[in-house]
Length: 135
Ligand code: HEM
Image (cartoon, rainbow, N blue to C red; front, side):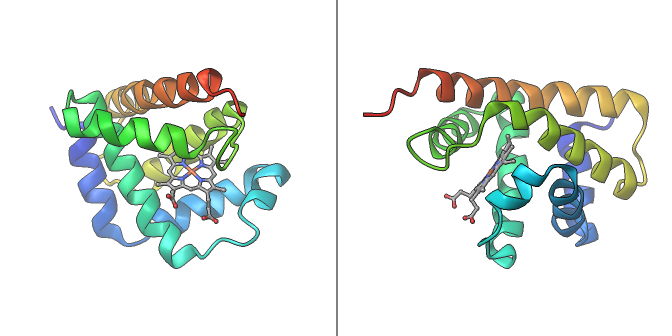
């Protein structure tokens, strides 16, 4: 049975993965468009792919993945980028929509697993946000 990490590798090879994801994300919500107003997308595209990889490795039980998710969580807290966790479900939906378009082997079982794996990392990032008390 193909895993979400197999799907991720296929998605990266398409070269449309990150650009298509950001088309979906920026069209989804005006608050989000504002957050990315000054973003260098050449850099952000690579960081996005890395971020998806980290979330999937974390769900697969990798210790390095866990450290990286912690760091990502910190980066999005109130004291840093301040990304409201309410926006995370939009982020996941855009990721799933992009994967469904671009992965030729996409199917309902894979979608369920992919979503569940991503959610584990997002739960950790949400915990980091809620535990972060700015000075
Ligand atoms: C939950 C999964 C997410 C992952 C894996 C992720 C990943 C990343 C990564 C790797 C960076 C670069 C960090 C750095 O420069 O050190 C970043 C930056 C950023 N993220 Fe996220 N992110 C997530 C969710 C979100 C959401 C939901 C939003 C808002 C809708 C968001 C908004 C941003 C913004 C505004 C930046 C800074 C962009 C810039 O440098 O201009 N992120 N994210």
